[in-house]
Image (cartoon, rainbow, N blue to C red):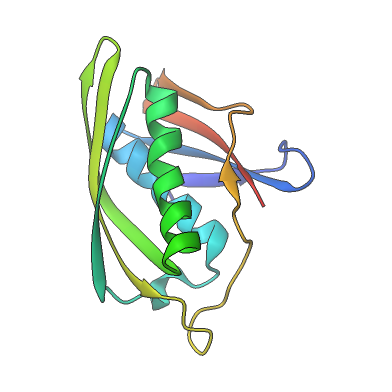
Length: 143
């Protein structure tokens, strides 16, 4: 599994570490973990709608924060759960970009087992770092 939940997050928060061989895989794993935080059975999600995701930031950690915030935004604003199966990260030197396609559907309580209601992606402990296996991201979600 490309991510694991950690119990070092503050009480009303959920923390996870996402890993990947490259930045694309690491960011993708973080998107998968965020969806798994909101939905107990993410495999039940159908690709009924698509939403292009594109964010920019001056650093990798803020880029990841903004990307994950997009998933929370669509959940709150349009009542959509979006799965992301591939993120492309590009740029560097203070001008990073991430693009992806979110595919999913509106909340359907007859099929979706809701988990935590993620309110925000926090700056607490947020990090994206090179590791011996590629890249590692530490994220805390406010629930």
